[in-house]
Amino acid sequence: MRRNLFIGVMTGTSVDAIDIACASFDGDSISEIISEEYSFTHELRNYIISLESEIKLKDLSQINIRYTDEIATAIDYFIKKHKIEKSRVNAIGFHGQTLWHQPEKENFLNEKISSTYQLGSATNLATKTGIDTVGDFRTADMAVGGQGAPLIPIFDFAFLGDKETDTIVLNIGGIANITCLKANCTKNEVIAFDTGAGNCLIDLAMRKLFGKNCDFGGEIGRKGKLSQTVLESLIQEKYINKDYPKSTGKELFNEDMLNKHGVYLLSPNDVISTLTHFTVKSIAININKIVNQKFNLIIAGGGARNKFMMELLEHYLPTAKLMTPKLNGFDIADCREALLMAYLAYLRVEQRSGNLPSVTGATKEVVLGSLAIGQS
Image (cartoon, rainbow, N blue to C red; front, side, top):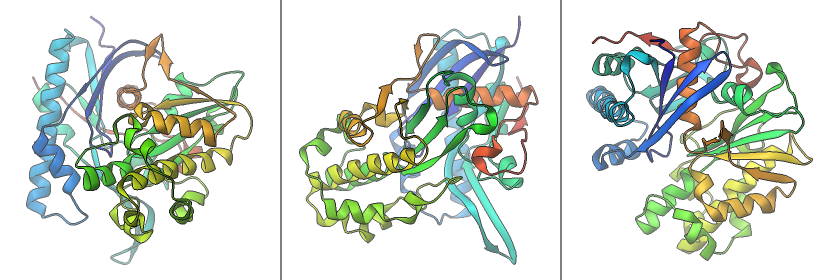
């Protein structure tokens, strides 16, 4: 039996779920798509969310394995539920949980260093599942001068472009990122980068003000009123108008930013409304730099469930045609990044490059990921 299935696992900056997807790849064709979302245990999710920039080495070592064990349990359940023959699974693509991402070099021990850190042990996962596992996808790109992010554009280029119409693929996770695929563009013409906050600031404020993990459906944001003054202050953040290539994370978009711009001086509902406007306007500012005519806007990620946010996208981007991402008739809005991990594992096994230098700023194409051998 041919080993042509790849499983991808993704947990994003929102720490809202464990996304698992399985697919078969043959060249740049994709088929047999299966996906499912699993919840973290309450204890693990709260612990990861609570992590600050400083953590004891013992705790870091322990959480690295605790997190991986939970991923292994989810994969085992996924395989059994969908009756996937392990003998058909070539490899697992395991991104891990990003705890730190610093693409810009800074002085460290008399050397200019940039770095990234994703929680999770590919070796542990491979041993627990018995399936070869590919992890550590960002480091190789950064080693050749890239930002190590975003990773998703190579998947979008392979599967979501259009020969006749410009396409923007927008992912609204904790951080928002876009892939720009001009009509019939080549690999070297792909543009992609993080625009800034996705759901992270809204989720942060929802936990603080309402004791909820997110603004489900955008109901709170819709009730509030926009503070134009606070919005304009937030939009002045340097990252929003910074030229690409660029990538970011919660190192910038965090509680300190909210306090800096006096966001919490507003009423609770107005906080959520203003932050939703900020997320969408920052996305629109960045899209308008590269596309200013009619285009397809394919929306994925948790933010696609926020109806208020979708209405604001139509307001701030009136020339966009909003769409959901589909492959072979399968809606991949919630599993696109998990499918990316499966695809990157496929590229690693095939020894094909997985980065796009035009996107990350790397000096050359490189094979991404480290392979850990599964042991039955």
